[in-house]
Image (cartoon, rainbow, N blue to C red; front, side, top):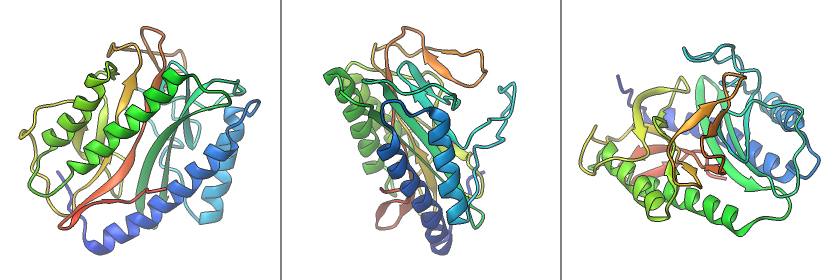
Length: 255
């Protein structure tokens, strides 16, 4: 069931989204050579605490997971696509790092992700990240009243496929509100004009996940959470929480 949010609820979600935005900005600045993923997670915890917010990630355990998620931050490095568990791994020059973060404030949730290169960047990695951001922007542009979920999916998929990248099989965006994952699902590839009509008050987490090698498959790490590319190539992830309004899409996690 899709819950339509009121204007007041969307404003409250914006406040949660801005905690997410501030945290990701701080994490981007802190993610340098020699910094561990656990140190980034600790920084994110500090910002949540200072904001009076809590984490929808910490302790989350969907049916597939062998254990509750142990961090407040998903930190995925190089061939890890999403759901990377924060560890003692220290970032190295040239690492491609994807950060996915959520916050709950006043009973409402915000969720966003970005990818970056630590230290010296390879041109191929910059192209991958730029394409993920462009696919996200295209999906957001399609998130207007009168369109359908398939229009968002088609907009994202068209950008990814035109660049020769793979799209993570079976994963995509989702509705969001009182809970991190709500209806509807938002695929990263699809046919325009198909799916649920977009209505004012719908709030979606739109999140393309790109695989550099052009394949769509993934494998699960022994931790039961981190999902890696099957071909060993690098991946990038971009995400915003977006409200559908009568005047157009409103990005609630805008940095």
